Image (cartoon, rainbow, N blue to C red; front, side, top):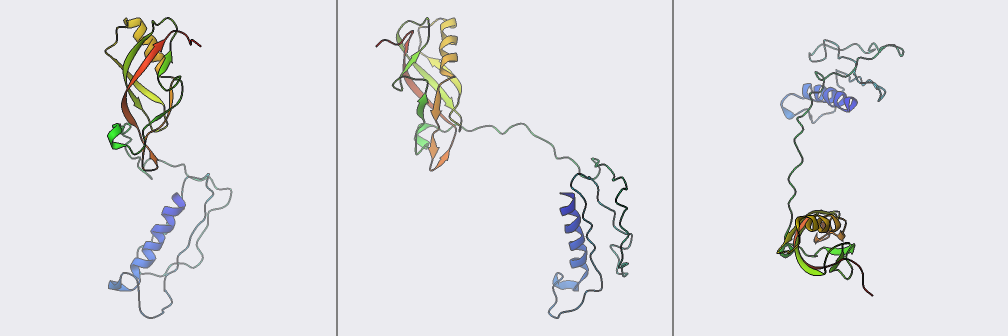
Length: 192
């Protein structure tokens, strides 16, 4: 990246000083009076050779730039050279409702017949859940509604439902995070 910055700065100096007010473009072909020296630096090195003091002036530059010796130590990168940009927290994820999707999320695995959740120790009953599904199909939040379960049973059901995997909902061909309400059946065992 530093190599790219160095090359772009050098090019802007050369282009900016040629041609006056035409933005560096001229209609005739002239041989430039200044040259551009590009120093290639290995990627593991962090610094670039400094420009000679005459880099921003109209004085001619020396045609044979002094390269540092191969074994010379290279200065380490400091925050003064490239200031770090502030890192903000993750952006808030938008969960689309079913009416906004062109394809609803589909159960991949974890529910039998897309409705039956088997949780050991739960009495057979129906339940309504609000489910938030990310764009990878993972359940990230479950809220049990109108359930007659105890707090311990609610935690068992929520933990079991968090393991359910979906094919994510889509808008067009793009998978998106979504939220939906589902009616499910709870059983403690599979009855054949």
